[in-house]
Length: 79
Image (cartoon, rainbow, N blue to C red):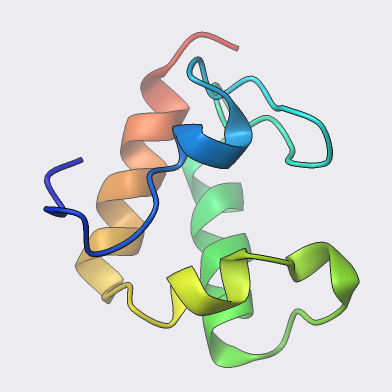
């Protein structure tokens, strides 16, 4: 949340409530483990394809701690 403009916010694509928007899936209320796995797979290149879209540039900038923190935050939000 405090990235000082270094990258787009999750809400800019996934919606202000993180419940999904257009082709961006819902993040709110998903399992933290699921989100960690998805982000880690995107970052390592295991997960590929057109659906990756704008996330490709973002996940490369995330540290392990960032992935853990973002996943825990999203899991805590109401679906």
